[in-house]
Length: 354
Image 1 (cartoon, rainbow, N blue to C red):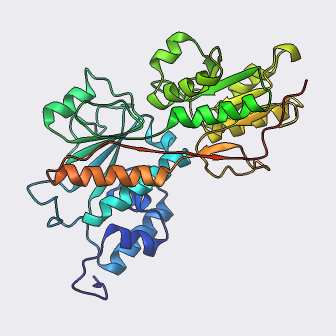
Image 2 (cartoon, one colour):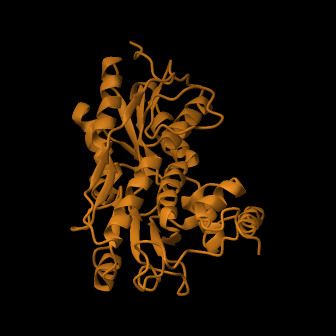
Image 3 (cartoon, helix red, strand yellow):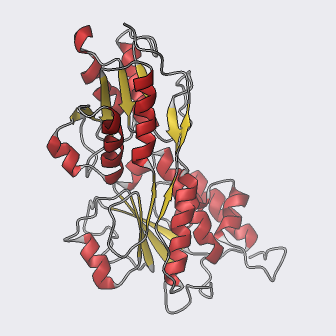
């Protein structure tokens, strides 16, 4: 096998990713054989690894050499294939994988949604640490298993786990900015389309029971909307996807004009794109007949207009979680981190029509 040009510098997974032209998280998944990566992408990664002389995680890597596996688990709330449709999650995983690559640790993806007895779970995965990504871990099962195993944990936009650091963003403050923007434009009939509940589900009306069971970011963003519109209601999209947002928006908009909201606060940019698609399907103009705001600040293809939203630092969240993992494995106590968000004015809001 060829050796890298600088024989004294052992190639890392980040080097492999750069040579293959893929993200660090994709390279980690392709090399480990875990997750939904195409055969062509996997071949590019393996070819790059061969060319660089990369043979896997360095057992001598700093912080991962005291009888450890060199593997960090990432627990996703949804099935892995479903999760990879979410660009926010992908960017977060990229930040996490890039930081872990500094010690050449591998990333193992796991799902809260267990589909078979042979699936790798938190109970049997050979991991040194676990990162929870937007999960509603059952405290009586998965969380308890991790604690009994003595595995360090870091939570990203997930329920606090007691002693574990939490990496988050200002979900409440960001949504409050969006709601205040709509208030200043004169909107009174405003509805929500929220993120999914503890598991992805079909769109449904937002009820007190739904609110109680919602994932943490959904609850925080709901609180931000109610800081400005105390009685606001709406629908649960069921997942952060365009199709889910469209179906929820149709339920809100396909009614008599007097009952129709003049603005929608969508809890993700993908949901907002679905709401805009539903409005167009019903012959409504955005923003003339309906203003729509999102949350995330991602690129949404084929929207045809700039979305009014708030931008969150998704890559930085993942990188912060990676640094927290390395600190835990090094015997240090990392602090929880909360990132600010930035209001982004777009073309999807306008003054309410009288």
